[in-house]
Length: 449
Figure 1 (tube, helix red, strand yellow):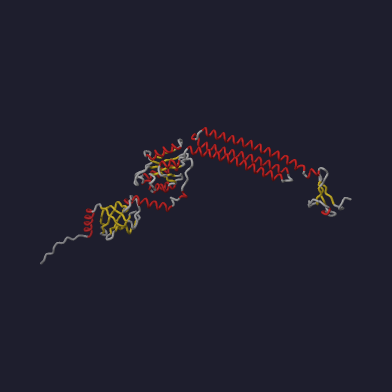
Figure 2: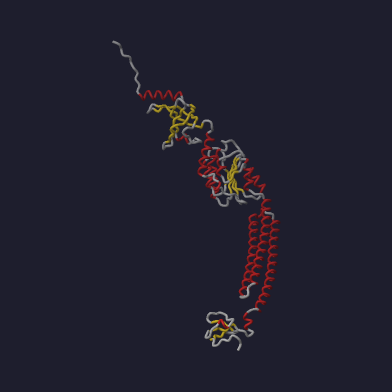
């Protein structure tokens, strides 16, 4: 009789556990590359997909806790490199790769994340030109968000003060590099929007590597810039560096120095603009005066053609003259107030001698215009009075005063010029110099009888 050999029989669970132990002990840390397929995400945030090449494939698990460190969004068909450990899923007896890190093959994760975010924000319209806000001509208060130890802040302040020594700048310290820097920058923008009197915000940071500038490529900062009610200038890195904040901001400056040149005007340029504005105002006042003279002459010409209602015409001329004088004085006063407002804004920042000279010039112009206007109105008034006297001589009432009368049909009011215009028994009204007669026609004679 042949003895049966003792057999060691394993359960499925025991075998699977043994395999799992061997696999995990021999492959605790591996790098694997391949193409993503069958990508899916469950409600917990964990992501499952298959990593494959031409001849094989392996299931991959990316838990939510590790997924948050990814700088890009995985997609089907994307070729990636994964780092993790090989494990066995005992319930189905399948081995799988549990990864801790993943990046696109052939392009860095940061670059991939940059391109994906840029494309998404552009589709949302955050880069659109029509949503860009204009910078103020002369900002009263400028806020600079930057590191207080960086050269970027020094370059901005040096350039701004050289252009306008009295410029008011508020420095808002913030981290510009490293973990949490983007959130700090976003909170700075939100905080400045809650303050009153801020005219423009400048994000300033010097040059660095793509990784060093990454805080300015994060979505949290882009959203803060897009919702800012205050114009935002992005001055990050060097001229060749482009960040997401550059595209979302209202204006991009190649460097912090260039940002200062964009935001802060030169005092000499402002002084020149004020002189040019004053010259334009003077010329405008002269044109207004000439226009009023032309209108007055036209009105007088029309009045000369009028044969009746002399009193109404005289009243209109007087009224027009007063209105012209009032309007001209109002224009001068408005110009004076406008100049005063510019001088008030400049305050101590504008040379006092130039301000005093400008005021004297405006006052002299006003006095000269008032004198010339008064002289012209006096001349025109004398002409009108002479014309009124001449027209008074031709007044029908003066003729009636010499014994003549005007006969009209009653009640038609038609003036009678010949006997053929009236019939026997017609009622007529005779207008005398003083009073009226109402008569009935009893006889008509063609000639004196």
